[in-house]
Image 1: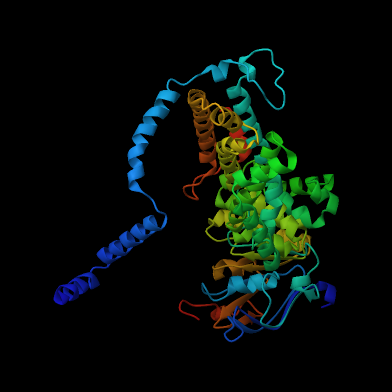
Image 2: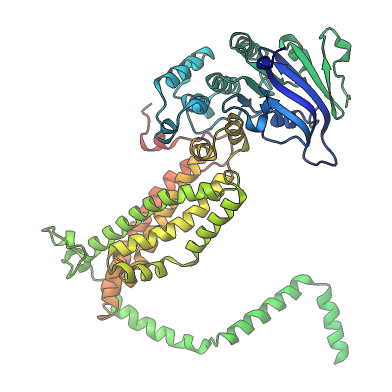
Length: 241
Length: 301
């Protein structure tokens, strides 16, 4: 696999908050373009911390974490899109405003100082909102939308950003099967059509298995990779740690 | 005797509330003695109050109808009531409050973003907090005295004084509001690789907008009330006329009329402001929070 295909690379990384007692040790992981990689594990085991480290929000305690061959802390502007568990939407603002924020990394200095998005940014925003099926809600405040609609707004924001890597933390949580299926389709089309790598945390291993190319599991303080999803006997059981 | 003291000691030992009460009473007595407060002075108060009441009642509402002897800037309206001390004074007080709130908001918002620890590096946050604290050390009255010396009598000194105080006070409220915003939108912006000022401008400030607007309205109310005080040192507003009638002439009836006018205006502003601010204050996260423009441009159903 060539370097330009590489999207996320953990090399012997220890992750957590205290060097003496890291949450996760010796993490080795590679995610390439167009891949959807799922992460499962018990609550509080360190899934979100792993994702925040991948986003460059936390430094690894040891080892290195790279995005597109550069440390995630110095990743190219706009190359990483994060969809946190609670989505990180600006509650008082409209759907249009929230989605447009995804275009900020591509805006020049004058456009941001004057708050004047270019025509291309506006068109990209409208296209993304249309793609997630929220065209009729463009001027609505996001706090007036349902949970599923808010998740679509967060995905549309990531689409406008046009990143190389999307990090999604339980963005399917608490959704009904129908809405979850729609969002999975959206993520799949993003990965295949735009060659974006997606690293997604899901608490439901059965669902994750249906749409992920690879599934990883956090067990104890290490990351277990399943090269072949047919090894279903290895999926986590209740009480696994 | 010694047995009684020992008994009393044991009595107190097991009763912390009574013990605290005794300590507090002793502290109050010592403080009163230190300040040389003479309770006997209180006996003169009733006599003085009677004199004051006789002088002040009935209030002389000619302050609303008659033309003011002096005003800065010069009042050019033909109608006498429009150039009366009450109307000029209250208008100036409101204008000083409006300008100082707007100028204060414009200056304090970037300072608040610099002082918020979730938006700025710790060294910058600390320095900015010290600047805001320094601005709050002096009350608005002292700022007014300083600016009257610097730029002379009149509303300009008042605007400058109230702006300085607004920056210090509003800046503190604002950086606390910015620090209270949810961590997740800021992390989304950081993961995008945006610089700090863009995170503040496009994520933190919009997220905290309800609190910021509510605080600005509160500050306007506050500035209206304090706008009357700064007039006492010549910084314009209704306080200037209160001082004018008090100092050389002791026309308490006119001062009382001005106080009544001020009271009515403050009550009206408080009520309007409270109604608007209520729309921005959440009691729970479940309540849908309106956007500010919805409050101003109410939708027709």
